[in-house]
Image (cartoon, rainbow, N blue to C red; front, side, top):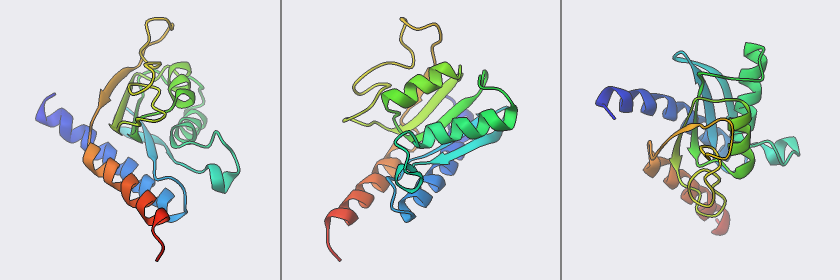
Length: 157
C-alpha cells in the first residue's frame, strides 16, 4: 500500500472513529462505520442496538441503510466501507448482499469476527460476490477505544 493510499484510508477511518466515540458517549459499544463512494461519505452509522432496541443496529448495518436510501439502491457496487472493528457474521453477510467493493477495518474482533478472526465470510469463494478486505488501518486507536470503554464499565468511579 502506498503512502497516499494509507493516508486516504486513514482519513475515512478517522470519520469512523469519531462515530465510534459518539456511540461510547451514548453508552453503546464504540464501533463506527462509514460508506464511501467516489471519495464521498454516503452513509454513516455507529452501534445503536440499545438506543434503538434493535439487535441488528450495528454500525455497518446503519451505514449501509443510510447509503442505500441516499443512493436509491440496495446494491452498493463500487462502495467502500470503513469500520473500526471487524464485522460480525451478520454484518459481513450484509456487505456481501450489498455488493460492497471493499471493506477496510481497524481492529480484529477475536470473539465474533466474521471476516478474519472466526470466519472468512466476506471474501469466501463459496459466495457469488467477494469483498476485498484491508485490515489494520488505525488498529491501535480502534483497539484502545474499545479497551477504554470496557475498562470504564468494569471499574467503579
